[in-house]
Image (cartoon, rainbow, N blue to C red; front, side):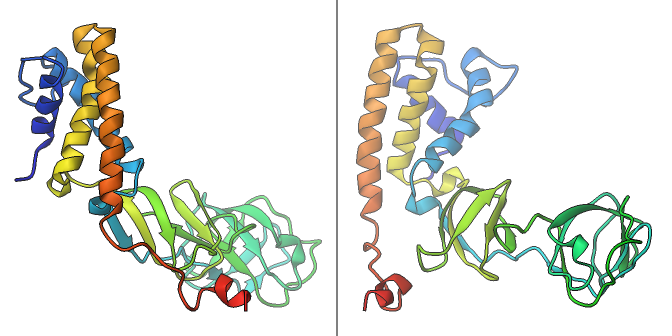
Length: 263
């Protein structure tokens, strides 16, 4: 039977000899209830993030942010850019590169003004002395200097574990996005899993972590607190070992680019 957050909390406090039940996580309730209301969620998320728990692992194919194609730019004050159905709104910060002709726009960020369906102005940019636009160009809702594409992380993502089949794909996680030069990716990540998905060993481990965290707050006993942390660390090692055995180890794929390069 799946444990609830309240059951896990009560398991935690009984381990340090606290006999008052937690009925709910209540910011206006009893001492322990207030503590769990303030601390339970982020301590649970922290423990989930610390290891690639199989029960919390999910896969997804995120959709890249759109790269808008530029088809025109005026030698005017301000510069007016043409880009069909660009979707930008006034005040958006955008980045432009790959323009041919009006190269003064390349590798710069601008603020969108007077946005219409297919055009927008570059606020405060006087293009009367710029060279004439010839062709091409891309407009991004992000700075595409190191990486060309940006993918939003899933809303329940606590830790990104893997991008694509190979470890050779370069990427960075910044500000809730995955930046990469791959135009399409699939990912594995640790999710903010609900208690209904917890296996029995993780319930035991989370209770041990909560015991260690709340011990001094409830008991004012440093020796008991140290013992609680020792128990937690022992359980953590065991839980990680058991979790890692759920599945065969990933081998080297026959079409792995690194392996191919060695022949």
